[in-house]
Length: 355
Ligand SMILES: NC(=O)c1ccc[n+]([C@@H]2O[C@H](COP(=O)([O-])OP(=O)(O)OC[C@H]3O[C@@H](n4cnc5c(N)ncnc54)[C@H](OP(=O)(O)O)[C@@H]3O)[C@@H](O)[C@H]2O)c1
Image (cartoon, rainbow, N blue to C red):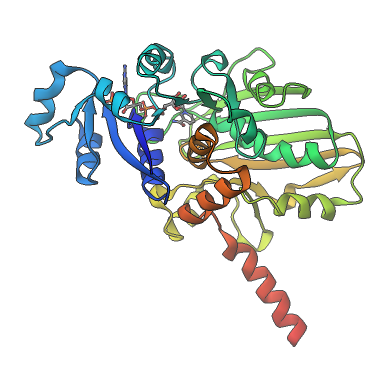
């Protein structure tokens, strides 16, 4: 059993902790937390050992009935590997701590790419992490784009990708973030940082990205145009290719899922924890081919799409399973399959054939 320490138990950290707990080959050794707030109480109620970032805050935790198991320094020393899910930039400050204890670590997309030897996506470059000590799971948007581009690159080649990212203003718990009633070019300069970030996974890829921010907490939405190197036979061929990807959910027309709001509602109805959607959500009707130009739109759940990637990164880093073995265990244990959306269609088709 791999003992995993999770330093930072916020939006990403708490989800990764639950995902680690669901795996047969790893266990949560403890979680690092700074403030004794409702999230800390939730972690204690789930049975996670809490390690405090600062010895001086131990009394704050005791006041809410939590006895810390130690400091983050001890968490790092006792763990086989650490997931750093602290806020963007704090991970870089933490790296010397991981080095001191010779504990490999998985950083998040808020860190600069230089923090780790590999910018990681389980679909695109799992094997590159094999000899690494430190990897960075790329951001939610870069994860979504990497998953989408990998099969296209393999089957047709990508001459040029152009993506407009309509990004959520903040996560549901980020009450101080905006915009409140606006649509803001962010950044106003082109390309946005997302294109270069995708190139940390696909160094030779020609990609330009444009970013905006809008007042929603639901999901990001990407409007994509990819010029392929070779022309697919038809749209169906591309659709079948994308539908064959385990972490790409194609949304059929009959489902009436018309936006991020209905997607989240669907995820909650399906009993997904926290309404999480680990897959890219690609509107099937939007998949359009004009010669070598492919167009489509996808939604990305920023709070959760990187969670399975963190689990696969742990296995890639410790080198005990292949990419496909790891991905299939992760998918199965988390329940990454909205298969019933597609199954319904197959069922209907079967019934019609029988009639
Ligand atoms: N949120 C997203 O949509 C998203 C998506 C993909 C990737 N990411 C990336 O994932 C990383 C984590 O983001 P997040 O949204 O999960 O952050 P978050 O919700 O703010 O959680 C950060 C966690 O780290 C703890 N922390 C804060 N300051 C710390 C410090 N100085 N030292 C140690 N721990 C500290 C926080 O504890 P307290 O709460 O007690 O302060 C909290 O538990 C970032 O790199 C981010 O860019 C985020």
